[in-house]
Amino acid sequence: MKQHYPVSKEDALPHVVILGAGFAGLTAAKALAKTRCRITLIDRRNYHLFQPLLYQVATAALSPADIATPIRSILRKQRNASVLMGRVQGIDRQRRVVTVDQEEIGYDQLVVATGARHGYFGHDDWEAVAPGLKKIDDATQIRRRLLLAFEQAESTSDQSLRKALLTFVVIGGGPTGVELAGAIAELARQALVDDFRKIDPSQARILLVEAGPRLLAAFPDSLSQVAAEALTRLGVEVLLGQAVTNCTEEGVHLGNAEVPSRSVIWAAGVAASPAARWLGCEKDRAGRAIVGPDLSLPGAPEIFVIGDTASVISHGKPVPGLAPAAKQMGVYVARVLRARISGAEPPPPFRYRHLGSLATIGRQEAVADFGWLRLRGRLAWFLWGIVHVAFLIGVRSRTQVALHWLWAYATYQRGARLITSPASTAD
Image 1: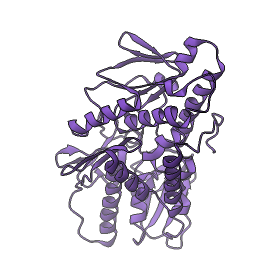
Image 2: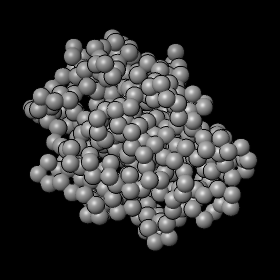
Image 3: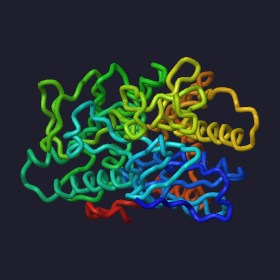
Image 4: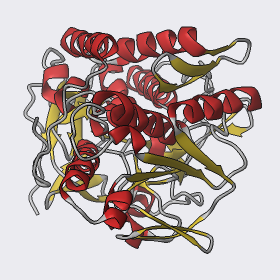
């Protein structure tokens, strides 16, 4: 196999290879902008995705281009960084090389930030009928399923089939599940309500299924109750303590009961990327690589694992798989690398700073938990919008999303209601 190194006039500089351009990897790359090193950022896609708003693409509120930005565009002015689009196939720790599309890339320091995928708790065959939401392809597939369900319900004369088509099941009561269920309810009861002649979209049945005793388990009990009540007002059936025992093309099984549905969405769990297998290291039950206090791999100080790929303990507790946590890890690893490269004293062990949790439920409904302050309703909803717009990369994305939301708020409409082919993610 050939060895590939990025073209540089300063080949003698330490080579930092970063796998993954999500929140963790991209933040680390940007934080190393003024460090005397060569950076190669590798991702299997050519864009950075703002995952927290992916559910809005799935429910036709936003288009993919609103929440995705080309990686090369983001790093175009960072002269010490180059970008490669490719799929990682393995890592050789002894030789310090990463295999990407049959080519080997050598590294001095390696940062693994390859994220997470859907976790089906040993039932991977469910993925075909209950897609999760982790990438743009997932979102456009779900959007297609949702919009097609209404179209097919309009055209069929079979009442039992129509009922199944107009039954939407979201599995998982975390933030993604809550936001998806609320958005589907608003799509049916507001955006589509006047568009059909034979069916009444407002009569669609939306179920949110959670195996645990309450929604939003990471939030305080009081805010979980607020979320459940808000969803109920939107017309969502909240089913707590209900474990899914099977998913098929005909619907879902909750214990011994079957719910006929043609649109099932999985938001119940995630599993780490294969990074721990590539590295041959110890991992937790979710497949995340277990790292040390400085986020490096035990026994391999030149390898860092961050973001959803890593199992990190801070303040005696696991660090949650949130965007702010991933960004904090990216900043921290950049500090460690700068200290190593310059010969300075290394920073103290990583400590996660929880900035708060936010979840939106629907129009003017959201919950926010900052520990010392808990918000609900309009104020939390407004704050949620400000935070998410601020986190987007680039003035164009922020402006477009803000305008889309303003238009949707004023008209109750959604501007991305296109049914594209399964192979297409374009709008």
